[in-house]
Length: 550
Image (cartoon, rainbow, N blue to C red):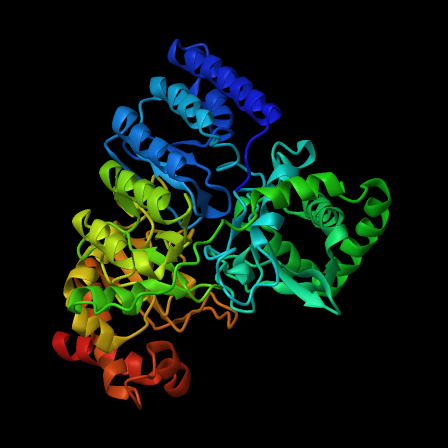
């Protein structure tokens, strides 16, 4: 992974010192909350319902064992002994005291981490495929591109005050595990005639007006990447709406301007800008590439083993093929049955750090699905890894199944939320806690948002749940058929919403309707929905409810 230079370390030290002074002035009353707000947001500090929240950047989801251990220490010393992994591949601490935040940032800086651009109307943390550098089928490790964009975008003076927050995702496989179609800019590395370049997608996003991104370039040479990104950002910065924050994202600019006209504006800006912004220095590229060189993989012959039933279930669900036949990527679920999705204790973080150091070439990943990845594990070490995870409560065998739920913090934490998310996720997880039942149901992605901002990605859930406020009462809308992969689709709204105590039974009816409608046990929920459409699911939802109310 990328190692900070002395310049990077000096930059962080200066930034922390600057914020320490700003915090002191807020605490002594020299700064009002309105004056302090833009300063704290520049350093990843939010004010939520009950306390401040610090969001820490994990660029493209990659961190070392030492960094994970530092997060554990920070959570114990200055928070409540846990962290919450997010759909932006970041981590949040939900209970820091304002006076402690500069010390937290200083501790982060000591291990090459920070909270810069995890909030505000700027280019946010660049995300990438969580199996980057490990998965077969990649044309190149997409983290090289993500790191280049991180360096270019950090404190970029022209793009520090955009009309709205701006998100970029990168993948290098035809299988989209980075959800590029739902980002402001999505990049897919491709190979053409022996050369690697990019497909560029713009204008994707969720929230109150979800859009699937549109291809603005099917091929962009690698040398032109930064010049083209600058062109997109300049056109957006000048043309994006600032009169209405709900219409300020680039997706609205694409929708209102039209793709062809906007493409022409971007290309014109690109033609001018590429003459002013030279190609990236080969030395810079070489230095970045050095940081992402593959580890010195072990070549030990694979020794066959016979797993017990619980271990077998784990192997069936939590492994992903590696580019090497003798290694696998292990997904560690942060969704124990009845637990809070994304929460990991300090003790569990230390276990993960130790496993990464002992068995995983000292590397970990955070996925946009709020899970933790050990990307490089030799087959011979799977037994030891599993035992350590099981002892730490981290061996839940549910990745990709009904209890592997994405959920935002919702009304339990977030000042923007209009309904609870976490209790709904916990109830669904408990209802379908039996592992055999989960395997029978098969692949199913449930995603829950506690407000229209869609931080839980409900629009792209196979079953999406959106919590709203209806005259002071929580009301939950359901959508079906969403998909954040290369087959991108927005979910279809089923109809009227459900009360808090009705929504989990409604999800149960949907799943029973699927089991009745599928043609074979191998046909997934999403495949069945695409085959039969909304009608049978709508009948299961509302027919039973109306009958019960009669």
